[in-house]
Image 1 (cartoon, rainbow, N blue to C red):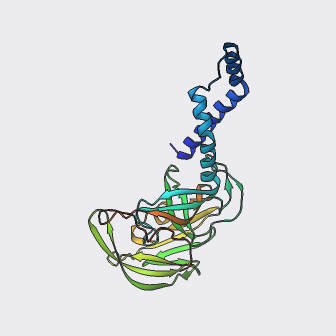
Image 2: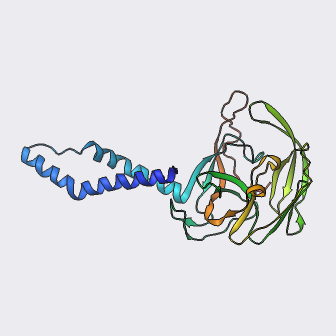
Image 3: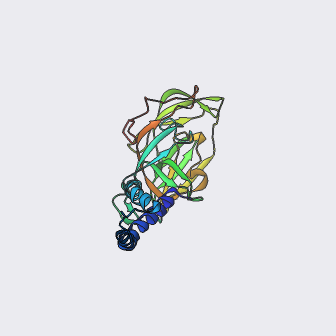
Length: 266
């Protein structure tokens, strides 16, 4: 079950208990206690509801309209995001949406090319994905020989040497690292030289949808394989790494990652 829905149900239940008790039950208890010469006490359910309702309300508002935390479970966005990074997502960058039903009520701005975006996977909305926005509505996207073309223009790549990482528990990979100029938004990408892909992929991005890709180009399940991201599935814009756990070398806090600002120009 969606955590936002669980939070909403908890908010409604604790709020309803507190409200009903304030309007009706507390008066009855006070009257009976007065007749008996005793001090009225709140039932355990009411006591817990009064204690937790304000906390749940604050968390619900923060997660729904301000910022929501997510954990990076895979290496599809390497080297930008690593497995074990905990990111914050700005929930109002692309507009204000009703919680749970995810219906946009106020449009502030649209996703821009180069944004690191969190969204609900179109084929299973219970899953959250994080990828980079590559194609905007109306764009023509072509991916050929590990090169990205947008509206017929190649996105330049500058070689930055090698990048080593472990894919899984033991398999070590050495990939080529590049700085890609994504229509004036520079960011790092990884290309596996052993996977020389000669296949040409072409896409035309429909209105109200987005084409997304992982920075780890040969190890990312993205729009090249399952299609576009509708605007209704957009969650928000990733902007900050607030914690990071290094799963390699026995694990431990990756202090150098904490405080990293995302979507910053290289």
